[in-house]
Length: 250
Image (cartoon, rainbow, N blue to C red; front, side, top):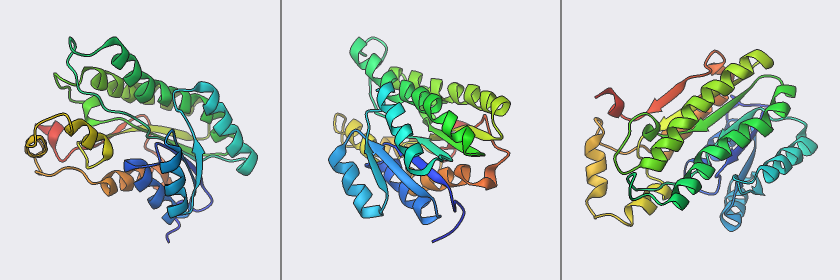
């Protein structure tokens, strides 16, 4: 076990799988006390038991539940230093094929939840001293695709929201930072769900789009989150960290 996050308290949404689960393991390993939250109660409890972290059942689109989760952390620890807004869903559809219901849902889960997290966690993070908000966006928030209309929109908005939050934090805290993280296609449950409705060679096509010719691994994203969560990145705020194997350099 390391000590890069010693004495820090972390909350990771979407912690039952994928980036959330991987990040919880890494932050715990580096000394943080970790809370994970997820709408998937069974999966969240299983991960919490496996990793030795705490779990909240949490619909991240519910503003009232956000306030309850933060209050429970305050009661237990009176401190929150790291917030990882990771919960999200994927959706494929062009502008004409995307239903109004899908548009609303993607923005509620992928964007509104990030707003709620920043809004309701910030008072406790401010009182806790310096800290780090890490909002998980996507390379789809940088580079658009014709068939990711809602997802592109929500993830691009997370990028700019993070900048606004960072500037607010710079004025009102000493110092809570806020950055967005933009992973390329990665081996997670979200990608698997998207690929279940596509042809069998889609994975190969995705890999060919990435100059390094491979998908990201969960640990690639978890290690970047660790850096942003630690004091090693104390001068990094209001920016985006792109983990895309060179895709956006083309």
